[in-house]
Length: 269
Image (cartoon, rainbow, N blue to C red; front, side, top):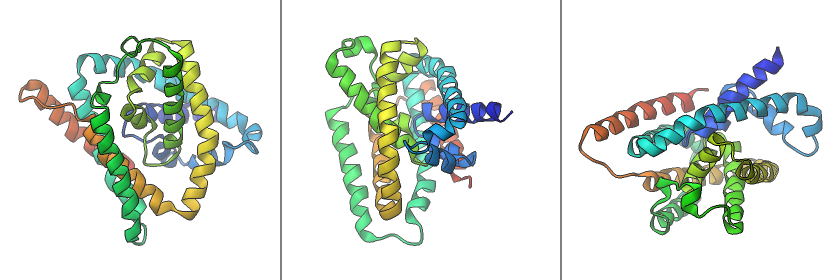
């Protein structure tokens, strides 16, 4: 019975990770298994925790797969509405993350990390203005060696983000312009693409655990203020423009609804 429970928990985490702005780490905290996952994903402990990790992983893959087709269709047919919903998810997640970063008080020097991360996102807005469009594989020119390296890198960075409560790995995919590719590869079962993404995720998982544990132990506020800067700046990249018509009205409604949903979810203890 506990295997079924782990699969369901994995599905919820997978669905959360598939939506930019919603944190799989936060979902794991809500499900009260975050600490167990952090302990299990290490070279020292992974063998003894496979009975927990395998059902969890299967559930996460199933959750992402179930959602990928829906998101892919929405990206093709309703990109402005979808991106407004994504912005709402980011907006709603910021207050809880700020409270986590603030702790017992803000050290002024940590605002430097916020400013630096925000500056990076502003820079990316200018050098990659089409990031929100997230091109298809055909638009990227196919699976060239250079593209595979870039996809591996984005998966590596996104997995590190997934580990942190309050930060969405899929948001990093979105910011780096490969979110559409990831959703497309899952929806169409493109095994070569999935293999590249999977290798990046595995490498990012083992690396991220070590780095994040040290950062959370020695520099937690600096880490979270940097994340805040990334999240605030991400809305500049995701911004799809606006039109004063029925699509604009639906987009604003989606923004409000998803902001409220993300706030309630991320604020839950």
